[in-house]
Length: 303
Length: 291
Image (cartoon, rainbow over all chains, first blue to last red; front, top):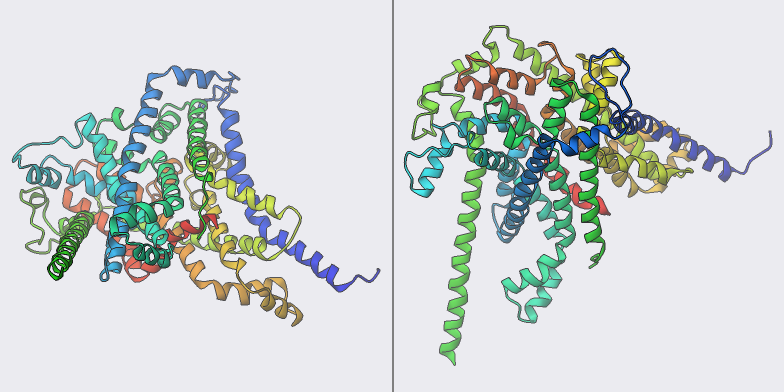
């Protein structure tokens, strides 16, 4: 055996250990992420049924063309997009307001952060069960809304009316996650150097101008981040809608894609069709992310 | 001129006082709205069902109606299966947290501190899995689980969550700033790479490990979709499945329902109030995702 220079052998040894450290994780992702997504795409090209012994027939894009013609599927797309936009917009606006207001306080910052974040800790099943009871015709939801709108004794049909049930799911989601995004905004706000505000103060800017011309533009990266995370989360919503339908709410208005995939695969045994839906959901999520990254690339910020 | 100034001063003072009061009121009202449902759950869990849906709602229960908790734990059929289901949730969440921390730390360490061919590709591949939503791959995973015969078992509940890309990313970010000199010094002293990992890296990454462990535990405690697919028997159900079942049973009363929900929430809320900085830090970590 020839003698190697020590540096060379250490580098080789290090490179081998690098591989040893990442291999278990890499194998896991190959088996549990990459294989399934390719498998989902492959299965989506077949007329595969759960529990069927016949080998599934290859039908090409048949599942996709079926879905694109199916009003049920378009209802799911609509329900998902309505939920996503209807939840994401107030989430973004209110978490930003909460963050700015909390940061403007000299005391109780911790209390508000913990209080606002606390619903995110509860499991989504628990959240749905609590709100189902609040939305009961005799429950707190009607009491509060009647108190606020001064309309005693009216039932607002939180779960029965098809518009209201969509609003209800949005409200649950908003309540659960607004604190989470508030925290992300607080971190973003804290990273804006104080010196910029001081310079603006010398130039005679007031609070309002500070907000419009300094805070908001510099917060753009955080805003984009929050938009991406919250939109992707909303597109994947499942628990709230599932629990609500189990609790007696009508399925059609809140039949989001994930719920539809679940029903198609487990109740209808249409594995091929469910896989096609999964791939469409995957593509929609990629598109959302791509569009938002695209819009964020334009101007990077450095202090 | 003097006069003008005082007016101006006064106006600014007044204005900011009004704004100040407005901000306080806004924050307090929002806090009430956000806290109310959780408080509602706990107070309602201590009331007979008749009182819960009485208008107006009494925020302070008259007495402690512990029967709800007994009823919730006992179940409508008296099988006490909830205790087993809580145990299942604890086992699954603990095992997943442990494997996630270990595998993420190993991979994160490998990616942060070792140079090898294809390192960037490996990192990109792992990050790319963040883009694959679980909902899109759950059907193939379910089919594989059935084929392997591990549906309705701990192995089936745990397998798809052994590690996740966010964990690898978090650990890598944490290790990247770790000084190389310390590692090299240990190597010169004859420490093996595994020993370095165990005795130097892990003990020095407690905050990252704790954050990751807590976030993973919480996510599993919350998991509904996957158990819904793979679990068939009552014995293998986790807490979310028990809640779904308990809710859809005919004889369930609202008080017992809230007691079941409260039992599911108490452990995680206690951890949260004790270790809130790790929860908040976990949320904050996302902001550093770009860097």
